[in-house]
Image: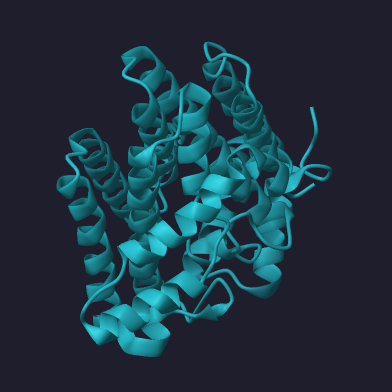
Amino acid sequence: MKDFATSGLNDIKAPVSQELDTFAGFFKQSMRSNVPLVDTIARYIVKQKGKRIRPLLVFLCAKACGEINDSTYRGATLVEILHTATLVHDDVVDDADERRGLSSINAVWKNKIAVLMGDYLLSTGLMISLRDGDVYFLKTVSDAVRRMSEGEILQIQKSRELNIDEPTYLKIISDKTASLLSTCSEIGAASATEDANIRKQMRDFGENVGMAFQMRDDVLDYSGKRSILGKPTGSDVREKKITLPLLHALQAAPRKEAHLVLKKIKLGAQGKDLGYIVSFVQAFGGTDYAVQKAEEYSVRAINCLQPLPDSPAKSSLTLFVRYVMERAK
């Protein structure tokens, strides 16, 4: 199997490259508005081109399970609009000034407009489903929105308390990250097949790859220059988020040293304290443990693909799992 260094996203996208090109116009058109300011902001958002990971999963899963059709494009548009809406709202919450190399919506048009634009995007995505009778898509996405909101609130609560165990951590990342990737995989499959078992397999694929994705990102917060999600190293500690690498190290370390680390985090770790905590996590096996757990989820994800017939799309889904695990190497 190729690794990321020799393949990259272009190879992963190859089986659906034409569909992704068509999707770009579909997505742009879906956000159009007769209100000039809304339309201006929508066009600005389109300029903030990301990797389009979520539409990619929708198209690959659809092609691996059957044929891409009009409902596949609607499903991909729905999840990308939902994802974009959450990013706009996140930038407001985080007071972020930049998104994908451009000034954030809240930095340019202020918080009130940004929040309302996020609401507009969310409602637009839901209306696309209602207009074309994609009730299954609507139900699936609505559940993802609920889970994402609950996961974010739970993480905020635990960050304030600095009190978290592994099952709670797993629930948080399942709801915050894996839920949307699971939705992408399930919607892609649902657009191409009525087979309930295959739909479930693809939903489980997305859930597992989403868990591996977030764990890998949490590892890179302690070992890379920047994480998969683009955050600078140590940002989780500065935000008082206890992720799996730190959680494991706290459990493995002597109680006195673990208490000292928690105290530094509570007081707002910066500079040398931040470096101390990163070294602490590595010394007590936190990053190694999290990598091992991420690998377990990646294996589960690949196993979910076994019932599918061999195809270029299936191969790309397998390669995508390795991309998640190996990207920073």
